[in-house]
Amino acid sequence: MQLTQAELDYARVEQAIGYIAAHFTAQPSLHDIAAHVHLSPFHFNRLFTRWAGTSPQRFLRFLTKEYARQVLLESGDMLAATYQAGLSGSSRLHDLFVTYEAMTPAEYRAQAAGLVIRYGFHPTPFGECLLSLTERGICGLTFQSATERETALTQLRTTWPGATLLADEPETAAVAASLFQVPGPTAARPLPLLLKGTNFQIKVWEALLRIPAGAVVSYRHIAAALGQPGASQAVGGAVGANLIGYLIPCHRVIQQHGGPGGYRWGSARKQALLAWEAARSEPVSLG
Image (tube, rainbow, N blue to C red; front, side, top):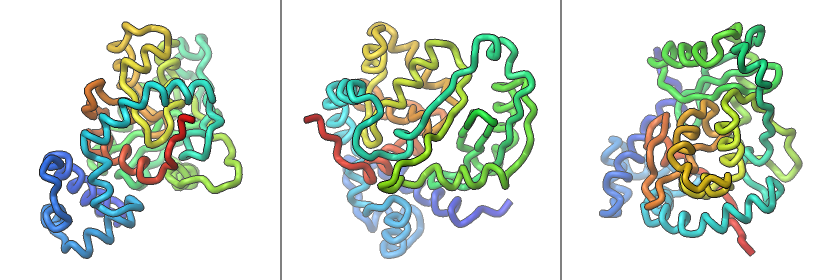
């Protein structure tokens, strides 16, 4: 299967991010990074700036551990301020316009019997995604390569065993195209999600929705915010169980010491998401 231009662009960007992450202490030059992805510095700079909205050099600063540590040092107060303000702060990325509905206990026990899920594979700035829609909202957003499509569909079937799955890319394309756009000054229509999980998992996912774009918090901060300071490991399990990537921003949770930690869809993609958001977000005011 031939890759689209967007997929080729992200593949090069992902390679560059992996190289930067492995060599950030040496602060590699534009020439060094471009050489690693077999592009001229001019063409690499143009590609990267078009993709990230910022220069490779500035993006490099976002990816360093010093950036992660600095944000994490502030994130306790930042998270508290965000919780106090609810989701009505200054303009952010689309996740501030997300609303969700959890399945009822009866529906959960029935394993979504009778639910119709329409799905499609679509390009994003972070590689191909599988987007899954129901009448009640988005129930899945996962990342995979074109060669991993069947694995992604098997996961979708396993997650929603009682549902009817219908391939419908025309239906899902318009939603997919809107997901990674920065909203304009006018109010956006709430983007609905349909969540299926335990009560604890849904509480964790709700907490993730309150982390501002461009910010990171630790598993310990999430556990403390839920009133269960000793539940960091359980929080990690709930974060890892999230199957609505990016919209429920599990990529914004990092290790307490500032390391990026794991990510279901790869550490390079997690670092790309964090830096891409940081490059596009307004500074967070704690005043």
